[in-house]
Image (cartoon, rainbow, N blue to C red; front, side, top):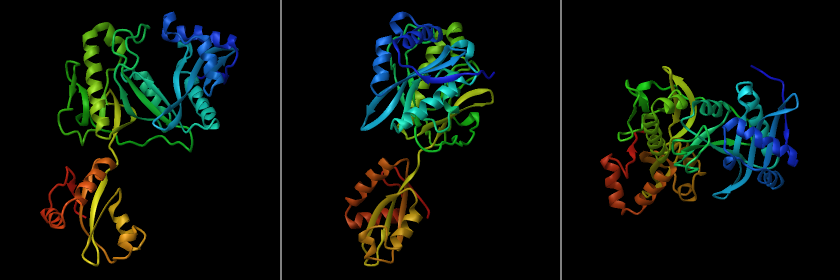
Length: 353
């Protein structure tokens, strides 16, 4: 269903008052949970944005973006986004998010972030349809106890979506896993079945229930089991460098697709004078070519030709960097023994190059 609509920034107290009523319609929120007019006005006047969608002059959708700063990065925190139930599925939600991104980009923001309940299938499906959205942060009980009609009854765990505000966006192309490769999946009794305690290198997805609302009504204790199991799965996956890159249906199972971390490599070169050079890279052969051309490092530029002696694979840059530091601290004889042994080094897997 497509509906004619327009979007624009909201600025006046009267417009902000309209959003208060809309919040209650969308989230069935008690008064204590509603973002008030004065807070909305302060947001719009201080680097944030309050954006509305209108059909025939009536406010039917909204987003609220807050000016945010974390870990040295400035971004727009999309604190609230919703569409009146009567107009959900009409394309208004997508139009609001795209307009939000345009305004954020023009205001100088590099990214937009927002949190959402990872067990809400509709939210996950909507968020990952936006090109370029991914997630690497999971928050446990983010808001504490909530009393609105959607969130009451479970810990308020949240995934954080990350959406670049600049550049041309393309939808992430991810490999479609099979149900046997899921880190978390439903068994025949509908209970969550986890593989977190096993080696998760080959896993590619996390299943969630088909309908959280129906599950909460039918079996609240099972809904809690799913909340805790999904929490454990995401925390374990993110700790190992995975990211949530897509949301799809596999054999009628709603599944977050996990993208494996970019592997990094520790490599050791033998220089023409017999000395050893150690470095890290995501592409060892390309890096070796740079060294051979005299463009890799000042040390190797003066000691060509070079020969690759050993290489180990790590899950991410941090692990490779720590392995590099450890290897450089070894005496030369110990380095040669380690190379000759063809064994692992600080959990890195030896590669055949």
